[in-house]
Amino acid sequence: MPVVIPAKLAEPDNQKTQLVVVLPLCEKELVVEAVRKSSAPSLSAFIRDAVLERSRAILGSDALARRRAISRRPLVPTDCLDAFIGRVPDDRSSAHLVFPRLHAFAAHLSDRNRAILRWIGTHEVASIDELARRFDYSYAGLSRTLGSLAALGIVGYDVGADARCQPPRLLCNRVRLHLAFREVPCPCVLHIVLVGMNASSADIACSSMDDFSAVVTDCGYMLLRLIAERDPPTIGALGKLTGKTTQNAYPLLRRLAKFGLVRIEGDSRRKKPVLLYDGLTFDIDLLA
Image 1 (tube, helix red, strand yellow):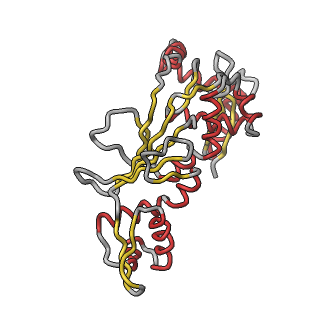
Image 2: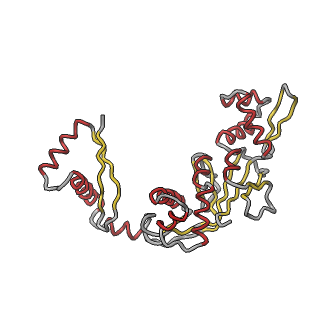
Image 3: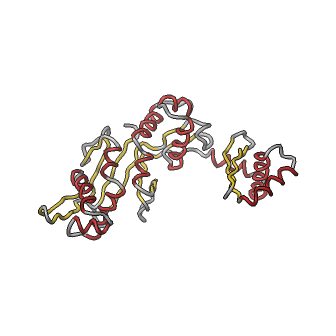
């Protein structure tokens, strides 16, 4: 059974990072004996010194100075970030995000997170602590959330890259999700927006991210792609392609039909799902 040894890795600028060392049980006594023979006051100090010594040997003594220089590069805001699921089209060169699943997209841009981003974009934020108190968020939880949004390029920090040290800045005003069900030269695309944006040119307006993610789920996206690629003659045939029964696939298809993405044709004994669009775009205004 492995032994997990937590330690604090102290950097010269007094920032601390949690370090977890996993050792096989047979090597535990080896480490303990080495600590006893060294002048280190504790196991944490021994691990810290060993890691820093090895890091300097690999990167050189000026590695920390280079890291600081890179982290202080100027922020480059953009008006809109395009988001994709799985992969980016070959012809896409503009700023974009890639999410592994629709669930990850909905989690990062949830209604609560968008409220925080809206506040960051419309107010002067003095500190992460102040932001956490305003939204009744734990300091650690908000730091992790902002860190994940910073990794996507939605927020950034003027100095450094640690959410605990600098107040965040909003780097984009809008995120646009692109979902393609089939590749055609001139696709017919359903345009969806959140309420609060200019919905005059939109086909559907959602009141919240929950409304969108309750219908366009990862399973729903898979169903739409299968309809586009395989053109199943019945709902039962579609269910067999996904490993689901007709009773499990039909409720989701009905929700997709109410959204306007599919049409269910046929009589009560033989219903066929028909795809009405080749893809969709979902616009989210982070300032609305």
